[in-house]
Image 1 (cartoon, rainbow, N blue to C red):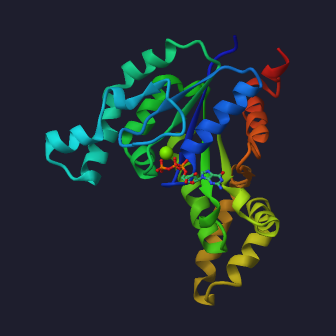
Image 2 (cartoon, helix red, strand yellow):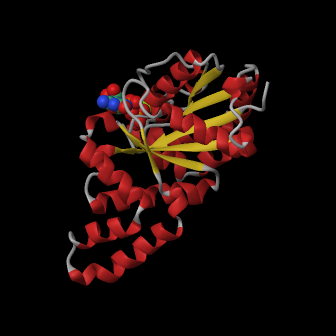
Image 3 (cartoon, protein in one colour):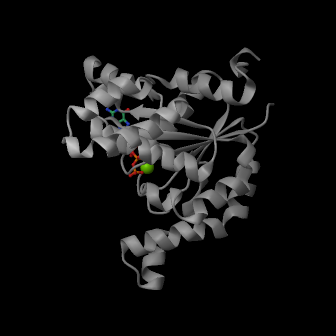
Amino acid sequence: MKEKIFIYFIGTAGSGKSTLTNSFKLWLEMKSLDSITVNLDPGVENLPYLPDVDIRDWISLNEVMKNYGLGPNGAQIACADMIALNAEDIKNSINSFQSDYILIDTPGQLELFVFRESGKYIIDYIDKEHSIIAYLIDFSLAKNPSSFVSQMLLSLNTNFRFKLPQMNILSKSDLLDEKDRDKIILWSKDKYALSSAVESQSPSIYREMNEKILQILEDFENSTILFPIGKDFYGIEDLYTKIQMQFHGGEDLLKD
Ligand SMILES: Nc1nc2c(ncn2[C@@H]2O[C@H](COP(=O)(O)OP(=O)(O)OP(=O)(O)O)[C@@H](O)[C@H]2O)c(=O)[nH]1
Ligand SMILES: [Mg+2]
């Protein structure tokens, strides 16, 4: 068995984290590769998979609301911080499995995991060296140039927080027509194309702001490229290859 690889699925609410956690697991199963799923969302009611490790075994959003007299948002924040208190139990529970791939589904609200201390703490505590972020961008938030740029800045922000290898994923791309999909992928690779799209859309007094923000994206070009994924395992093989490149220099576990 090779060293375990920890894949964290992170993205804005409803971007498709849980769906991808499930389809990645099924895809690995079809390739006879062993993985487990970990749910880190204490408030989730329905999941498309049965998690092998589940934060709800330790923390329940409803109980936190009841016990501390909090509303749903306050309780979500309290739960996010409590995840760190259970880090040892979560790590032990994950390590009781012998799987190569650990697929970790994070809470619906990205800001709870990315901006509070507990998300970074838990990743570092479990196994920072062998972790990668799969960052999901919902296609519907990337269709126009300025929202595309905002999503990319959020992705860079996540990269800045965790300082880990990160792949950016354009989720639900089966819902895009081919022309729109190609256009968004082009923006992620070619900053001239993005720049002219942004400029055509915004008043000239914002030109300097646009230029400076686009310069940041250009400087980090390698971390902005998007991998499209969608229904029926579309794009999952590319994600798998990217993970192999990151941790095994491209050597394919499928060939073992
Ligand atoms: N067509 C299509 N729909 C998708 C895809 N991925 C997710 N969805 C749908 O998008 C909705 C949200 O998906 P989830 O996987 O629950 O997203 P999430 O990021 O886990 O959501 P939260 O945890 O609530 O933030 C569901 O209705 C999914 O069926 C996809 O690749 N294609
Ligand atoms: Mg989810």
